[in-house]
Image (cartoon, rainbow, N blue to C red):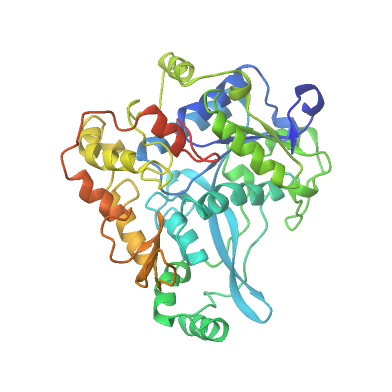
Length: 431
């Protein structure tokens, strides 16, 4: 990692990461207005859809993409984590990649649309065979960091389309019988328990056909086609960002009043050998939450989520504080009543706490406790870490819903500023 210096790095591709919150969106629009982004430099904006965002987030990012591409001519892509089947060491296995999606919802008749019912999130969990938690945030790593890097391997290679991923058979090759055989051979896990957690993966797409960049963006690679004719690489060409000789600039929307997140990013990057150069213009410019509020009060559109709530990014993200999640669950009906019907939470999706309860129950692990802490009883491993199986007060989404049904002990907003600051993930959190 290198610190950003505009003079030194002005010729490098700029990758602007938009989370769907107001801060990163403000950062993007300020850079566009200041003409700091250039399509001819292979600059690009990415939004990583986890399929667990609030409905209002999708509307907001759709407007943002439209303004970015139509008024400023900078390509803006929506990305999703996806797996595919391929052979390795004589066995069929699943491997992670990304897919480009349109800014319209997915359906059986429109398969290029974005997913919003938790499908991407669950596929990631099923792929790893365990839940992410506050220590091991596989969700952030897979659906944000790794997905973006996979995209850059193809975008920076100067291609018109992504490569084909997966085999060319007419159906998936990994069966339940094959998975059972593999797990018995490797470690002897409870086969039925293992298969229950893998069924989502077996039902997911088993390949990713080539995708034309110009089909998923009103800008795409068109500016490069005009100035760099006949230099596009073949579909199979790949270029690892880490091997990109001159590096590239990742632009992240962390504010000046979030020093802990700035420190987390710098610490993480210091541990990695990468050609990535981090640029945090809001932090460097001392931009605060109040500045963000003032910016959007002057815009003709805004993220239609009330300011006093904490619904951005994954609605019930386990990185938010326990009290915040209780208050979100308690106040969700009131919040919905203040919003138009098309932007309200939807039952049995990640904007409904029941989805999180069901996913935690389905994918949590129950193991024999051997430490003094568990006192010989079984342990469960869920979104909030390790606890005794019989501990009814241990943090879980089921417990959060139970607490939300009780009257609050004192009147307060959904989350205090301190809770918001310390709950946010350094990569995906945004106001």
